[in-house]
Image 1 (cartoon, rainbow, N blue to C red):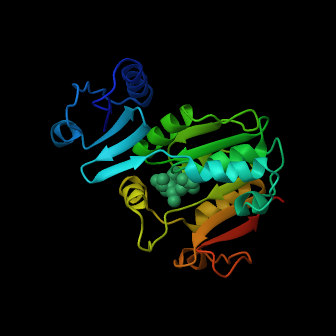
Image 2 (cartoon, protein in one colour):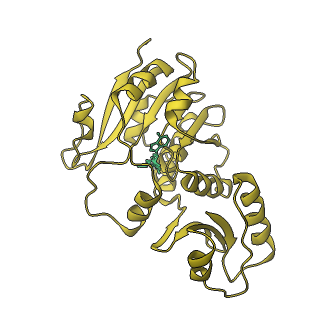
Image 3 (tube, rainbow, N blue to C red):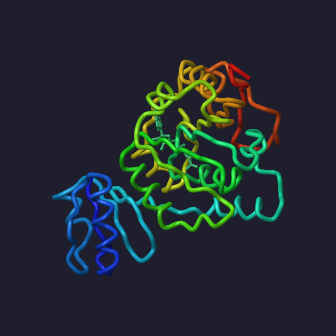
Length: 256
Ligand SMILES: C[S@@+](CC[C@H](N)C(=O)[O-])C[C@H]1O[C@@H](n2cnc3c(N)ncnc32)[C@H](O)[C@@H]1O
């Protein structure tokens, strides 16, 4: 993987790309004006993190995954407006100043919402095993305006198993998992791209047990109505709308 810019920008974007390459230990590939990205992808890198006028995106030969806080922004706006119906925030019972370990950061949509829920004095740590996705989420969030009512999300590139093992009992108020579902429904091109880069190892019962040790209050696991993943872990979904495609399991911390 490498870092480059769009073929239509220069100056500031080159500086951003060079800094990101250095931060993530990736090569920076200079791109000539209007040089097709395919030229780099076929000869010099399997995937590229591309900085351009429309933000940061991850490209490979099959397509593009763009960092876009769109849905998260809507959820944050609802919280700003006083609505208390975000399922994740409700189940986690987060209050200002709380701390959350998001074990599966992905594109950080949930982490951005969690950062708003815990507020500027709270703490959200997001762990992402895929180096490409960790770089995309980290760079995307660096350009995202969290505003004064959120904390920043601290990105950790690595395996949540290692982060959990290194964490003290009750280190976070809430530990959250949103693993890749075993059987995806027909997905959008963006979700297909996420699947190409993501680590798809199923969540294990051992990881959930370890998360219960690290949580002070709750462990939350997000699942799909169309997957048997939660049941395979012995988890049952919290009551919710029958039409919802996303389901949620919640477990008490083992010390709680
Ligand atoms: C469904 S996505 C999470 C989406 C995320 N909640 C969001 O709002 O964008 C699952 C992510 O977990 C990551 N992942 C899977 N196993 C992991 C592990 N052992 N440690 C850290 N990250 C992991 C995958 O690479 C993928 O990016």
